[in-house]
Image 1 (cartoon, rainbow, N blue to C red):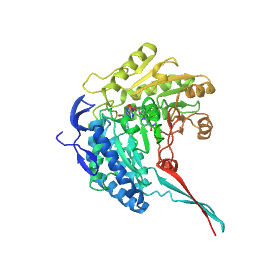
Image 2: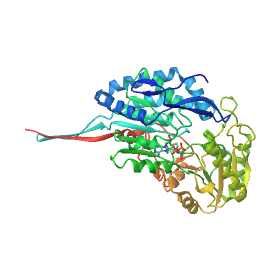
Image 3: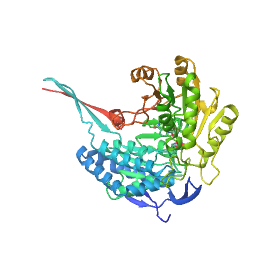
Image 4: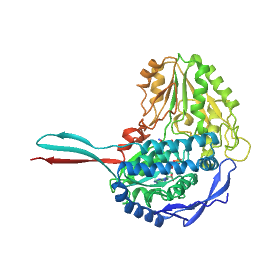
Length: 469
Ligand code: NAD
């Protein structure tokens, strides 16, 4: 690819101090070059953001809304280019990439329309006390490689509309769509309001500990999230941590296998299983265990795995070589400890392709059951007693999401109340409207994104207390 990608720093599109190759996971070969920023460029971006903040914060909601709407228009113009680039750097089928770019535009427009406003606590002849929400300042938005754009926009858009300025740092293996977003913004947003820095996994700590950063909005693994948390302590930064998950799909005994199997398969395999909220383990009543395993196995064998740009592909490669190696390791253990119903190995072709895999009869303490596999590999476990199944679902350090599958939604709601996680869906999955708060329980995160709670996280309360007369 001949296209040049640049960082956006202080309103200018600039080269990095070095370059780094970007790999297409469908081939395992480099297809483009990304700029790599260094600590000096990071300092320059933070300084620029600091200069931009008072002016941006001083605009009205309506003025900021107009800028963000124009930004969304600009993204719309580059829609297909962004979608194809995402498929090439991330691997997902083009139809899913188009869905993500569409969600990015919708997210910009949804948050652009929000206005937190202020609130009169008391207004009497003797006093007037009001609460206002002030922006925090410079926000560092750090994202992982599974959804490079939508995970950025659910930080960027609420942060901007509430008056903050943002520095985005994408994952090193998927920097290009974020850089292209910066290119779109360069002509539209004032210098320093939105900036992009790409790194080789080496600038995150400098960014999250930088005294010029007021809030760190981080999405990534729990292990890195803990490092981020400790790096915010010195300057008491605000933070939002959206971390890992090991979500269970719990099938109740009144469910219809023919109906739920395709839904669970989709919940596990979308984006090649690289979704924080993917169904990562399934619990099924023993009486329907064989049927469910067989139905999931048939779906896995029928799924079309291939390059994302190929129209027929339903499941693409996994995103990077480290993830590919990790999954091969899980598969070796699964073949030893359980029974492979379908798949069970990488595809014999170039690129990071793993056959969609269903595994049964694994012990509860198998790594594939306890850990976050983050790939198209799904363990299915039987249960005899619903109480024990709920206890097994909750016996995890994670608590991000989860699903209940049942013929009776009211019963589903009662069971959902017993699951210890931030979101529980009943008979659906991955429904994440922008007006609904999202975030993790336990070690899946701290704080919330989206919804009113997500907007409030980019602000702080400011009280004005007036004695009258
Ligand atoms: P990761 O934690 O390795 O990296 C995430 C980001 O953090 C990258 O941009 C990386 O460069 C940066 N980073 C690395 N070291 C850092 C440091 N010391 N300080 C600050 N930033 C640093 O995660 P990943 O492998 O890219 O993503 C997969 C993980 O993300 C999975 O665990 C998944 O569940 C999680 N995830 C969570 C959500 C959610 O909303 N809860 C959404 C998507 C993914």
